[in-house]
Structure formats: C-alpha cells, structure tokens
Image 1: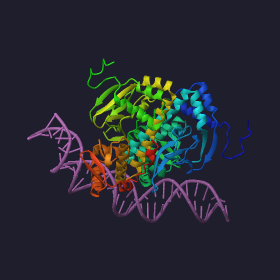
Image 2: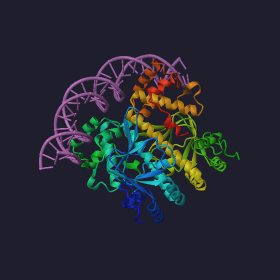
Image 3: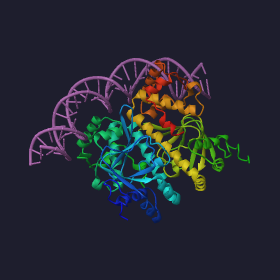
Length: 253
Length: 253
DNA sequence: CGCAATATTGACCATCATCAATTGGCGTGG
DNA sequence: CCACGCCAATTGATGATGGTCAATATTGCG
C-alpha cells in the first residue's frame, strides 16, 4: 500500500487529500452519484511540484495525461514571437487546465505555476476508461470545458471593450467569486498569487497602468491590496465599476 | 413526403442539401462511420432564414434546440450595458455556434447573421438521443466545442497583445485561409461579409481606426478592398505584418 | 433617382504605453 | 542579526496609439 509513498520528494501515487478538490469542483457544476465520486477518488495520479514561474504544460506538447491542480495557482498563457504575453485564464485547485488535451493533440498554449503549486497527472487512458463507464462524468467534463470557454468569452469582451478601470475591477470581482467557490476567500479576503505584471498580461495592459488603477481603487476605499493579499471593502461598488454580472461563471451552487 | 415542403417561405423540415455541411464539418475534425453519417442526415431540422443584422440566438435565451448554419455567415457577440459590442467568432456553413447550449442552460452571448443566412434548428432531445446511441458523435461534438475554445484563445492574444496593424493583417490572413478551405477564395480574392464596423467590434478597435489601417495596407499594395471584396496582393508581406502563423488553424485539420 | 448604410477624411485629444528612477519587502549568506 | 541583492511595487515625465466627433463621399438598392 505505502510502498511508493515517499521515495521521491516531488512525486507519489497515493491518494493525497487534495484529491477531494476534483470531486468538489465537479460537484459545483453538476450532480454526481456516490459511485461516480468514488470512481474519481480512485483515479491513478502522479503528483509533481512546481515553483513560481515554472511551466506545467508547454505550448507544442502532446500530452498523454491531464493535469489537475491540487494546490497553488496556475495560469494559461500564449506568447508572441517577441515575448509579449497574454494570459487567458487563472486556475485554482480542482481545475484541469488541459482537459482539452483529451481531444486536441497539440497544446496551443502553456500552463504555468504562479506560486508554488502541486499538480496531479492523470493518464488520458484512465480518464477515457472512466468516462466510458460513467456517462455522467463524461458530461461533467464536457460541461467543465464549456464553462472554460464561457470564461474566455467574458475575458474577451473585457480586453476588447472595457477600459482599464472596468477590466481591473471586473477581474477582482471574478477572482473573489471563484476563490469563494473553493473556500479560499473568507471575509472577502484572499491571497492573490498574481503580480501586477501578471494582471497586466491577463488584461492586455502595462504593469505601470495596472498599478495606477489599483492605487485609484485603494484611494477610493473599494479594496485593499498588500503583500499579495486582497480584501474587498465595497463589494457593491466594485461590481458597478467592473460592470460585473456573475452569470457567465455558471456557478450552480 | 412533401406535404410540408413549401407552406412557409422560411421554414421547412425536409432534408435540405445543405444538411451535408454538418457531416462535412464533423468529418473534417474526426472520423465518422457510415452509420453515424446517416444518423446525422436523419436528424430532424427546422430551417429559418435571417437578414443581415438579425439575431439567430440571443443572450439570455434558454434554447431547446441547437442551430446549424446552412448558408451565409454568422457572428457570435456580447454587448455591454452601454452598447459596446465585442464579436468573438465568425461562423461559416456547417458550424453550430450554440452547441454549448446542450450543457449550459442560459446563453451568455448572442448569434447574429452578418449577411442573408439560413440556419437549421435541431432539438436538443434529438441530439441527446443521437449521442446516446453513437458515442463517436458525442466525442465529435465535444471536440468541436474544444476547437471553438482554441479559436477564442487565439483571438484573445490578438486583442490583448497585438497592435492595430497586426490585428487587422492577422484577421485578413485568417479569413483568406478559412475561405480557401471552403473554396471561396479563388485567386486570393473573396467576398467579405463583415463591414469595417464589424471588423472593429471583432478586433477591439474603432471603425475609424480600422478604416485608416486598411488604407495603409492598400497604400502599401498589400491588399485591395472594394465593394465587400478583398484581394490579397502580397501574401508573404501580409503574414509578416500580422505575425501570422497558421499553425493554430492546422489543428482543425 | 433618392434614401440609407458604409466608407473616408480631418481635427482634436484621452487613455494608456514606455522609459527611467526610487522605494519597499523579503530571503539568503555571512 | 544584519547587509546585500532581487523582485515587485510605486511614481514621474513624456509621447504614441488609437478614440471621438463631425463632415463628406460612396455604394447598394428599392
């Protein structure tokens, strides 16, 4: 049972407690039977650890496993030839940022850790076998990728049609709700793993301008932002500034 | 057999020849058995016609059918409360822009015709019944929505990190390849269904600025753009200006 | 032929990028 | 425990890209 548990500092195959994240995440978007939950818990996983800035999956890769964020925080991004970067999603524990690799061979973007992060790798083979036995899970996974796409769309209108203040307020609103969803935002306060530079690359702005807008939001008493920690002080007003409407997150619970 | 064929100018339920588009599209992204192809052809459909500017599906709708573009050209877009619009995808015959409604109840964006367009509507019920019988089709549909998301991602880096010249050149490059793919771009010339205003809303720019950049491209002899017709004169140079790398379209086969 | 939608052009200016310098937090080696 | 060094955050100065407003010119079409 324990034979492989501690051979390697950054890789093991036993059930980590974080495995529950996956069940938790999928339950947040659909209903699961007890059997399905158990099957998820029994998936074989290999766990690896990453430092901030390290790539977990890289553009051009042809993955044979999907990764599941267990702990930490990850981003999905694309680069232009000259180094300009666009971040298109943030991911929290329970997310599977490259679930699409089940059907799309070549990764068209990268996934990187934004803070010390643990990720579990589940062979495509095991997932296919699982979804073959449990159509409910197949639909849950599909639904998950569809919500992903919905978030991309919302992000697009932000980058394309919102001004800097709206974009930043909107992103903070989105983060609060998503962190709440995984119980990481008690009292409307959460640790933010993104630097202002990361925010800039996510929003299509410069780091300097992000900083200036954040100063405005703080000056106006809407938020607090110190030491990678954000508190929302005026939730209502922040939503107004960000033209925020949570519908697109499709959070059932 | 023909009893309902012509009662109504814009709605009928017989097999239109365009029904083949769907098979064609899905075959372009996966392998289908003869049985699966036949099952697709037998799906019940209601056909409706739309004028330029008309909505085919609207944000907030709770669809009970999916639409299939038979003929024409459609866009998917979102609006901000004050009317700003972001277009996030263009769709050609064979596409099902709201396939996601199978799993996501409420539409978070709209679909509109960009020119006179015919769309077929297929009840969710029929699609579910079909994918229940043919898991291969279930995966084909899933794959289709994943490719959708990949195109959103490519669009995002454009809006977020490319300047106006790059964005516009890139979009023209993409259009040329996509039209070539359906034999609609002989001699690197094609009819463009989008107005400059549509382009602006797709690229996160103003119509005025789109116009100015187009003037530049014409002045430099890269393209011609008259009467909704575009010709690419210097394909190589246009790709350079747009930092265009067709790889991301290859994944669509 | 005439309306209505698009495209084009000019004038002006706001937002946001760039460049550069300074400050502050924090981990590490001495 | 402190100094050094690094990275992120902050601030200032300057200017370019691209937006807005408004006037014309074209083009499609009935």
